[in-house]
Length: 487
Image (cartoon, rainbow, N blue to C red; front, top):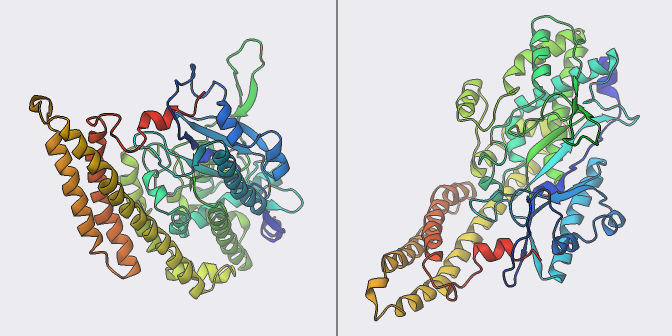
């Protein structure tokens, strides 16, 4: 049994199946029009957003990314698409192709698809859910519980390997989704926390504890329930009895796991590759243990006991979870610089080399590229902000104040607020002039010094948006950005 789990020709059966859960925002650069009536999730997608998708039911299938579902998402001007599952490398390529075509078609219609993880403050951001599984080239899915003893043993063993990989290479999983845009989402009550944990379901968690206590690998059965559709004319449908836990970064979903922390602007290939690495690391460890002559049950029980603390079935959004995770020894790498500092550790270099993914110098090179991407993104954002202040916001503030020359009683606190923008812009220029030259120190500086100054300046400018005469404000307002694509 152990040999079959470990020696079958393995490949990923489920790829990054929900690139639309990058929950993209569609923006029109034109005059405001009233939003359509009805709940956002239930009403049809607007004509312009449908067109921007490039005829989802027809051309998308022809271009290589056939959709299973598309619908509106929670936020205004936000939409989701879910393609049909396929092998991971093909699915990742299709995902990238969809993004390219969506932007091209949107531009043709005067729209812009926003793949940024958090384009609007205070409104749900966007992300991808990489639905990932693994199995043999004969169609056996390791993460489907099955109905016979063999399937259930494989299922229990495979999750033991995954738990080992996630626990021992926890930082790698965090690095897989670490970049500037995703720092705005992770842990922000709309995406999983930056703490990587495994959610196999509460029923399976109890089964794990029974194995650790000496129980058999068999005994777990995935419970089903009848889910009402809410319509008397429709029959109830069979569904898993347990929810997938949307507060978890890596929950089980019936026959696969869902990596819910991938950023909407990311290429899915790297996160899925890391999923494969941590799983292979766990399988390699089990193979080594079996090679010593130990029984499969004992090896699996030992792996669960050693890595039990990575399994968490509670509320990942709760204030108590970070404290609990700290007690368990799980890292909380809540910023990209903290995560990237762990990527080229000796432990990670060793597993990459063992699995023939990266040599040590290639791991260092990958880390340097990720640092450069982060630093470049923050530098561009900060310099763009200064440019917007000096060429747009501050001149508009000056023109606005001129209108109150003969009616000082109506000026209010405009002079103070507008002056704060000038001071904040100057301070941002000063901190940018002191960026260190070391690539790691530069990333930390951008995160801890530059970003907070940008946030402080942005808060003042947000106040200004409500003070300036609408005709003077040099950029589209939130109202225009969020509503104007509906028609």
